[in-house]
Image (cartoon, rainbow, N blue to C red):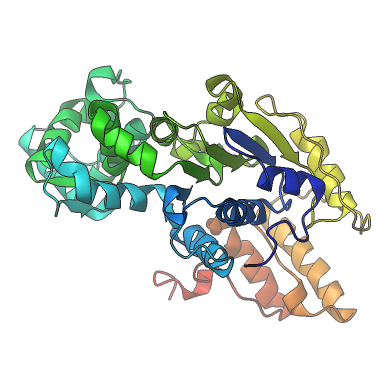
Length: 384
């Protein structure tokens, strides 16, 4: 194993070498947060911490896989790196029987959940159609679960979907338990129940995972943060890494207050800011800083870079999507004429439906393109 402190800047080194106790790393975009997490794990191993005592949690399978590869390359082959959901599923396979679940409980995906809810809507006389569909009802229940709101606490609105949720939320929970099944949200909720209701089991997990690291902490929801609190109730050796300026999942239940309140919940917490950006030019950072400083819910942070200032940002206002697409295509055509390779050009849009106008403009100018993460507009089945 190499030196875990090699090639780190002073702030990164301070975060990696933090001893026991809670730590929040406020990591700006492009500041090397994943490197800090993996190097901190390597440093803990260097200090004699057992790899079996370390648990690192993140949100996506891709992120967990990439982090696991980095950790293993640094010698942490037995360190558990997992998503919140996969970790809870594994733990509940072992101890879910304490909550009355079989070890081989089923895990329902979104399709399975919606099939179950469709049956319950029929059984409870809820008319389907219009705004009421199993998918919409299931999504609403999922959102409530992520907010930590159970059937008894649910205050429904006046809409059709809320009325349907009021009828089937509690029966859905009962049906899932009768089936010995959990959906993805239940994995987190039931793990919290296990730790809260069974102190002996909680102590086992708290002793087993004496060091907890959480990536993308700004995207945790109420239930995930409760799980973090329960797992660290004894030793409080928790390192969370995140940035409220990068919180983009509030629509899925992410609770920004988790990162804003961390120091209140862990009074002994150290706070380290990673403010050196290794990804962008000075011009882009200055523009981003000028915008994000208007956010109300944030912790102060000023990104800087040693890179050149770079080309100025150009802002163009157009009257329609088509005009906007023509402007983009024209600018790219000009770049290509001046020798810029097409692989050096990227177009970002807010939602995928906006790609149609851009693709049409590219086709009219004979500009080749690839759509990353989905089909092009003209490859979609309904267009063919």
